[in-house]
Each structure stands twice: as structure tokens, then as C-alpha cells.
Length: 213
Image (tube, rainbow, N blue to C red; front, side):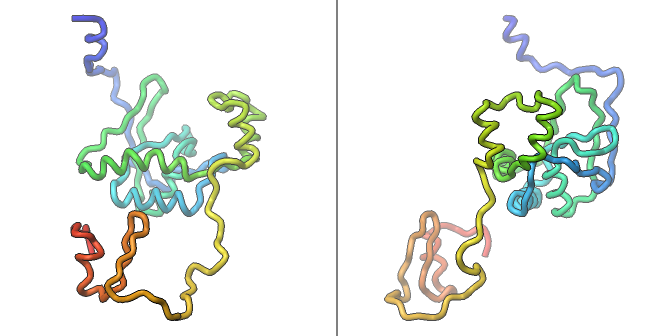
């Protein structure tokens, strides 16, 4: 057997003592007051929706006092989603910690893979707090190029959507158009049909079956 083959074999570690695991109230984990990462309604809402569909499947990091060092957005979204308890596992930083999530369907696995990356992309940075961290500990800049660091501090990159020119809840006044009943419009991946909804499902779905009505 080659060295490479032996390296790939899974081994079972026999620990001198099993890691301590606690079930604690989620609200007892304290959010970080100086969090350089900003979480707005959009990314928290997205995380909450994913939690409802997939369930918790990742972990955060807390210190000895229960302050959340990593995963503040996850904690906030879990609270919004109605979760009230959390598992806390003691770790010493010597062994990576992974969560084995059982019972996921194929669709849930797909959602989890994408959501874990998209959630971070939707949040932003508090530039003042981020700079304060760098001022007292320059090591936080490791992994950034000078150009990337400058761009973040300048406010470049992902931003929250800006308000439009009109109230999104306003209903336009009725007006005459040339649209006739039965006309179907394709809007990218969407379809809009002018018809009575009671007998238009087949046309607007293009023969596909809806997951729900």
C-alpha cells in the first residue's frame, strides 16, 4: 500500500476525554458589540428563509464568556427563525470541528451548498470598526491585497439595494393597452399570462408541474 493511499484512509481518533457538549439558550450567546461585518434585513432574511427550508447545518464560534466571535449573522437569523436553543461544543483549537448533518434531501443539499456562500456575499463591512481592528492588530489584514483593503475602506463592493423612484406598493392607475386575453409574455425565466387564472395554469407553466399553488 502506498503512502498516499494510507494517508487517504479514514481513522477513528480515540480521545482521552469526549469534548464537552452543552445545550444552552440561544439568546444566552451574546452578539459581538464591535462586529466589523454588517448584517442587514436582506441577508438576515435570506438566512432565515434558508433555516426554515434546510434547518441549521453550520456552526459559529464563541469565547469562554459566550460572546459570538464568528457567526453573529447566523445567530440573529436563527433567533428570527424561531430557534431557541444551541449546542455548544468545547474545542481547544487543535482539531478542526465539522458538523455532520443527517437527513438532508438532494434539494436541501443543493440549497445548503449555495446558501453557505451567498449569505456572506450579501453582508457588508463596517469600515470604521474594520479599520479599528487593523489599527490594533495588523494581522487581521492577512489575506487581503493592498488594493482589496483600500477598496473595502473606500466603500466599494457589494452594497444594499437603493430605494427606487416610486413607492413599490403604489398601484398604477388603470389605462388602456393593446394586450389581449390569452397573450403570454416571457420575462427572462418568468412567464406572465393575461388570462383568467382558473384556466390558465397549464399555459403559464409551459407544461411543467408546480411545487405548490
